[in-house]
Image (cartoon, rainbow, N blue to C red; front, side):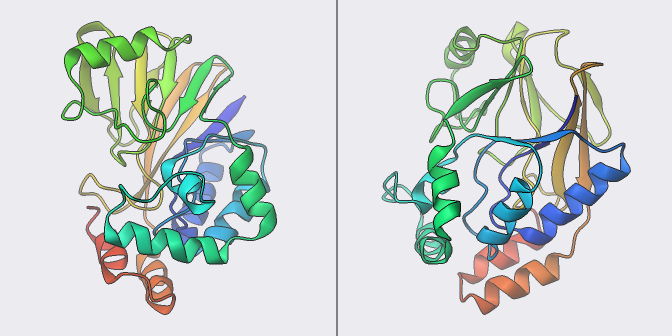
Length: 245
């Protein structure tokens, strides 16, 4: 089975469409694994949900997904994120709310753990070296029952190996074997990259060959920005797309 691995789409339909088209050009996929935050920030929440759900899909909840259905407080969100959440709540269709409400915080698929944040706090915590102590990273691995774990939330692509708790940035086209060593991997963000590269990020995982490959894809950023402007969402949510921050 081959899986399209996506995270942090954030209602960016143009980016999601480009990712799916590119993945199909790379041999296609049998299903999609989504690591949370399908909605929030961008202007196409319903369209993104509809497109994802048109494929075999295994998804987990992200903090923006839960906030959009009023399942978590938005007190900790910055003002731009709060405005986007409140706008998204008004846009979501009933079936999309039901879908988001039904996603678990973590799940295991084909021998891989999927979650949004960290094993100890899958909703809010960031799996990043600057946000965790070495002991916290080590403890995270004790909370994972599988050889590998895929996360989102930080919008930064990386692989962290259990041995040495070493974080390494994923490189475009780089192939990893997830069962060679215990690891936590972030494929990067589809809809709002924050690693200085504005291109949409995703990965393809072939469970049969244990091959995990990171990809970056150009998409129509100006079209996504124009929709954000029409929706009268905060300008920064549009401008940051062009710089990947």
